[in-house]
Length: 298
Image (tube, rainbow, N blue to C red):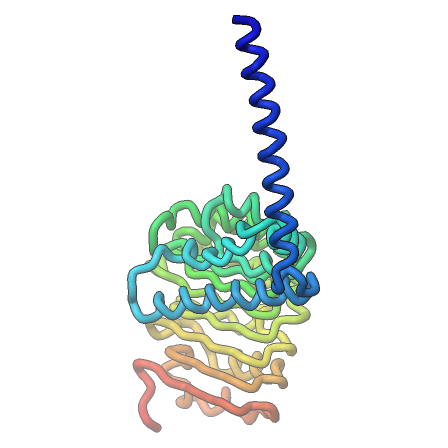
């Protein structure tokens, strides 16, 4: 019996040895293929383009209402890291491959964030619709711990969830260049839990602001800063408490504006008080859209 056990151990050692040898030979074989002879930097760029293309493909299907698993589908490109050792090493050592974050689960964010190292982040999340939406809010909170690195933030969120992100919105957003927030749900929650801290912070690089379904506009917020070139504000109902004088003062402080799109933002009596009206120079403006439910053609 003892002799049999020794023979089995010897066989197991030989199997392990030959398995390792086969893996090493396969690795050597893969390194001789034409694509493996590409410079590492070029192969990384190919991976990045593939990842972005997969993300856009998922967006296309989402836009036209086809069935998708949401953000999870946009990580199908990760299969490139499972082809061979060389490709995996290239993928894991390319922070820009991982820095376009589609927020899914906390567990996946915990694995993904270290791979971004110190790269700027582009973050997109929908905490309202699709499978596993309930997991995305805690996952988003983990991502926003790195708010100082976020260059683009695209957020679709229920108004009742805003209060849970107050601590994250308190963090400095000095790298932020693009902010897009779509609010879903009753405006009752927003009056007390509106992310005022995010809108009051300094944003020295902010260029693009898109806010939809907003219940209120505070034109005095530092969000409307001199660096902004694109501003889109859309309210589902006529925004109350907005004055023309406050709006014009804010626009005057954004001289680089090239695109301005306002829906249900102008007060219904916008032109009744002529003392509030004055000329504001926007020399870079190329596109202007002003509309609303209560505005007359005049």
